[in-house]
Image (cartoon, rainbow, N blue to C red; front, side, top):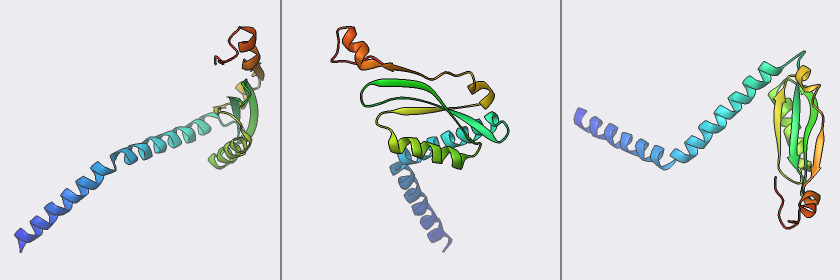
Length: 131
């Protein structure tokens, strides 16, 4: 009986190893996502001042206009960050990214933009935008 239990345990371990091997890439992606989420939570906690954080948005639209320095002040919670991200993503027509900063440090950030399509035309390579 003990020999049979040992064989069953060995078979289960083989199956578990096969499942882990088969899904190792998914598990790695989940681990990376969990680490990124933990980093976001830590960043929000370290940048909170008076219960708020500053989110600095940069990106580019579909016409080749790049922008940076759009500052929004939101509550210092992950839920508020997620809601802000979803709102921006809903209306984005190009790539964008965020930086979480302390509100006191973000006060000095000035919003800027560049028309990359016009710059490319003026530089003689209107077929290609250099970012």
